[in-house]
Length: 145
Image 1 (cartoon, rainbow, N blue to C red):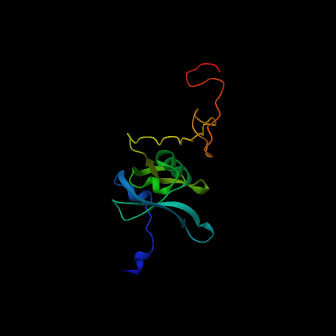
Image 2 (spheres, helix red, strand yellow):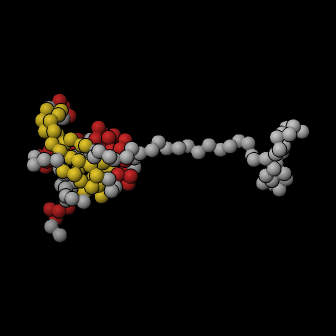
Image 3 (cartoon, helix red, strand yellow):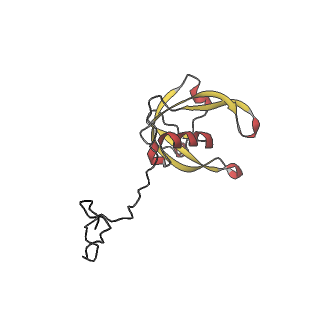
């Protein structure tokens, strides 16, 4: 293996001058990106279709979380479209940027359902100690006692 291959190659806006690319995420992990004082932790995605990886900024990370879920493992197997756009970089400099599109027809992730415990035990079910559960003022036939 060439030692030059040890370094991650990240896509940039110039990677998409020939047009948008539909890519399938194969891995998404948090990694230090950049050098020295400018290094920061970012999600980095790998793809089935290209060898280069993509470091997501905060805006793109939020879009992916909204579309596929909070965990990087939730993103694996989903397709995205990356293309060249024009925008503002850190520091206010304007120029080519990577645009992210979630393909049409991607189902939204469902809102998490929080299970709720029923505080009232079912009637006539023995309690954990083997004693019958207390019966409220109406029996199973709805006849007041």
